[in-house]
Image 1 (cartoon, rainbow, N blue to C red):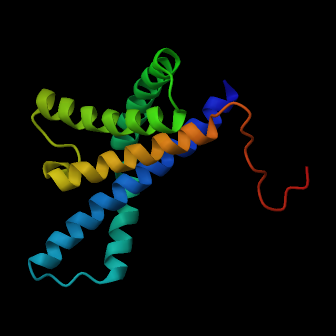
Image 2: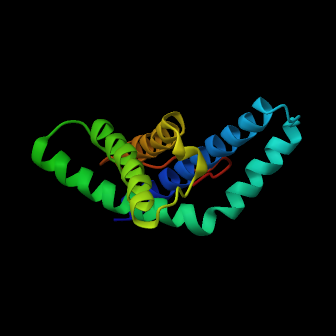
Length: 153
């Protein structure tokens, strides 16, 4: 169980950071397309602001999504066979897709604006797939987490 938790949180955090960075970049690109000058410092500040601001909602939604998606992937992998590095990334991507579709249908809103477009939604799903891949690699039986730099134990 500890191995799974040690894999879950890095996968979740990486997915969240990637998804938010992609969303913010899309907004900044849209502003640039409208002729607004967006310096790189503003883009970095906006990304940081979004990462902090969306943590109480989107990060929590992604956590619930990953719990459900990875549990399903574990069952499918046991029943159907196949590699963990196939099922978990697929589960991460499909989980994020379902999250956005269900929230849109239930609440009539798009939680992350970038998901209104096919390319934006694909980017969010890609972030989910990356998280699934990280989870598959870090939670694999026999996988040991690398020691922090400078740790002699």
